[in-house]
Length: 196
Image 1 (tube, helix red, strand yellow):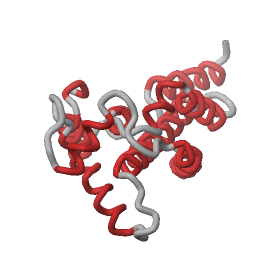
Image 2 (cartoon, one colour):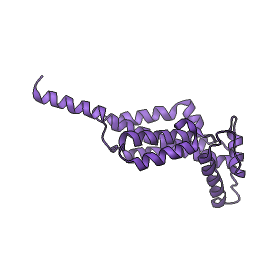
Image 3 (cartoon, helix red, strand yellow):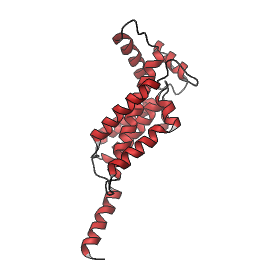
Image 4 (cartoon, helix red, strand yellow):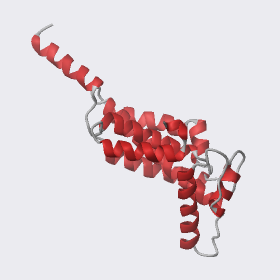
């Protein structure tokens, strides 16, 4: 093996161990998230569905406390979405509060999927078609049945997926930005204790 070949292999190994600091595909991730949100929108649950959805929506409407751990971040964001949505829409539309919480879930899941696609594209940079790898990873994640279900229903898991993806982004791509890491970890702890 000659010197140039050895040097090229070392560079590739370094890229695999330490991906570039900023994903080169942030705009692609944002566009992917917007398109995915548009895809989720027609499939949103128009009202409450099984599981904890009814309890979470009722707690957000009345600013109550759902079952432990209480999901305070999700509760506050859901209450804000319900009140903002009700204030901004015409009276003739009168969408259910659960629809607004479902749209919040779709937004967070679309953002999580876009961020996952951008991170996979950045990690795949040493290979050809890294952006295609990111897009396929994002599509695979977004299209899985459990992710799709929690993206279109008023549940807490979409926010959790977004916070976990953001935390991974902060740890891998911005390890020296302690403030961002602390904010995301704090928001994650305010949402659900399993993030810690």
